[in-house]
Length: 595
Image (cartoon, rainbow, N blue to C red):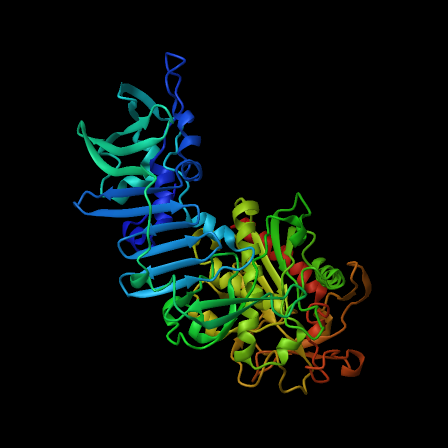
């Protein structure tokens, strides 16, 4: 189980409390000697907060943690039919029935309101504690007493049951002999009244959690203190989700004067895409009297196989391929819609055009993602960054899902063309830094996008390829005619690394076309419509990090993209050197497996 950091628990409030309760308030059903004796599993349903509110209308619940250094941490919960309140030492959180989530940061003296839009209410559910009782089969009742309608139970369990939390309270596993729990239960209703948790150390019970539930208690908000239950609503927020796609929706949210809108990018399943700089984070929102617009992008669920163009395609291969498609959406919009079947068909076709390079030796995973549409490449680099970040979130989610659920220690080839190349370089930088993950990476084929010197300087594990069989490296190049001086892919002044796919060297010596094993021109069904051995030679430009292609006429290979000049061979990057790339993937994998 995951270790919980004490200081982080105090900083982030209720969420660690919920985690701790799940870990520490564990009790098991046990087979009592008498059928009429209470069993712990019989206490679960009566002690859900929902049932207590139904019965009594409200409750107060006090939760206290005790640490080895003598410090304590107290949380008070109040709940009735309309409101859930969690009062922490540093903040107060209030969730109302209509999905209003208010808070007050006591340390900074800041009231705030969490943005809640349709489909984000799961966050509120996760934020709330829902019961006083959890149990596990390892826990056993060791004594039972009864007096005046109250049952007094004592249980015990192995220290290993709470191993991940022992350090949290300042103790060590070797000192804790076992855990014990004492609680009082209303015999008639099976409702828990108090519950105390102990570590047994040197034969003595040391209290580390106490809980108390008061049924029917009412909570009256201190409106003057919070300033969030009344007051004129003066700030209006317009929230746009999935902007630029067929799923775009707009919502309105108003906030009382003096209350800040809180945005949590990774919560609520709506990461921030781009926003007014004054409202991207809770404490950056200094101007509370100005209307704002916020743009959010929905997360894609990659446990759903429908969100993958290819999933585990090609069983029995020695390595996995994580392949990211190039730009296929040429419509006048910001992002490709995952519900646009025509565009998704083109997306699949673009993958098929290059997949043959990797098919012989890899099992393929290729996610659909809300890629940036072509028009975004006409924007300035600064403007384009926000769009790329949004598209990258999908690719990142897919890759993390693959690593956790599918990889199982297998070698990985990362590959992408054009926008896909930009994505896989980012994945390598962001998520392959650990020794465990680095060891899995055979190579990254980032064709049609620069491997910037800045990236290599910043990330020590991102290394440009230097030879034909080095592994864990990035293979990058983009093609153009000798007379081309600049493209939107490689502007003047770009500092990047490139490699010659005919010689697998990084010098500027020309490679003769006789070294070209075969240029293959493919279609959307993965067919090779034509193959020309020795079509073209190439060399790396002395002044720009690009691959200059020789022996062909630019008129025979038009750029097709309005953003590219004549002689911009970008769309042919992998087709011109198809067989050399295919051979190289196999050679690098063999070199990797021989290590």
